[in-house]
Image (tube, rainbow, N blue to C red; front, side, top):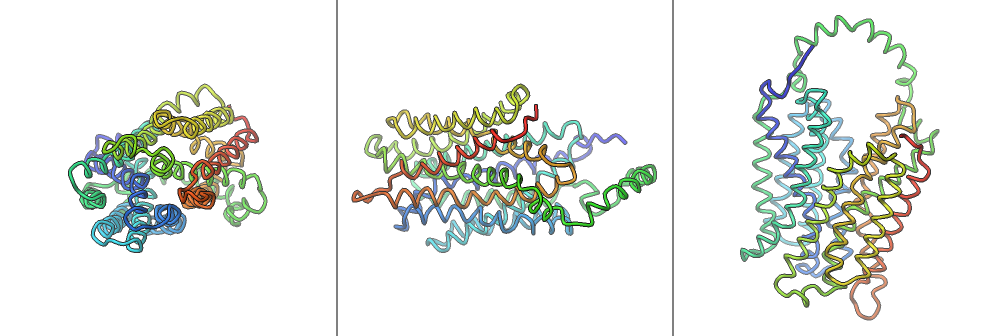
Length: 427
């Protein structure tokens, strides 16, 4: 059976998917520009403002599996509609109801909704793509997601320059979320996603029945036991990789959310640049995500030529060097060194994931995915830990010691280096 899905009526759905990737990228990664505002607006500690941002990843850890179960029962389309609606309520509450508590609840609600969107989108890309073009298309959508991440801090600057308060950013996000909800609700979806039977599939079913019986016989032993539990109990190597993902996601988000604090508290950017400081801080955060985007675009070229384990060790070492330069130089040096960190951590997630998958028998693939996706909850932990350490060592100046706090990031990078060192060479 030949399916040219991209020209068979899914253009509107493809555009909706692209818009959704951009929208959830912006809503997710605006936090670095927002949490310093949370601290100043509600007069809370840097740790508490970081905890507010972390609630997004708490929601991710709690709801990824339930969303997967929901999607299998009620289809990807319904998952996208409901999760987009939840996201809309989240950003609207953030925009319209002030207060640290309401903002934290709204951030958690955004996390719940965006988790559902992400759970549905990646397999949806496979549904609307020709198999030979799936990897290319998914990469393109992730680039669009990265562009949303890059644009979000700049949006905060534009809103401030227009004379509005920072929370107006979430009014813009509310509009985007409403558009996203309608965009995913009305296009034509592939029949298999709506619970319909693909007529061509009937022919395939008949032709493949013998192969299916044989495959069923070969996999009965695997289905008779809980592969996730078996993986966790009998394959301790999985913990090496799971902790690697936990620390990678945590330090990626934690450093991004620390940039604004660092530039203000340590390097006194407002005193140096005056009214231009706000734009410079947000641009530095944007450039961090831009560096990560550029690194991912070049990553496939690099990984085609360098073994994954050596790529991890080389790149994470350069990320550590970049962080060292960011915290030991002047303001101008920090403004380019922080984005360099984003570039050098860009390949970590897919490379660690690939090394992990290649370290175990193929029948563990789904169990590995579940374990590693759960480890993404690290994004809720490392940022608040960095802030807490910075505040605990601030001394009599009553200004967080971000140099000390960022030692946590160096520790994360060191562990990720060890993941590469002890991984199998897959090249």
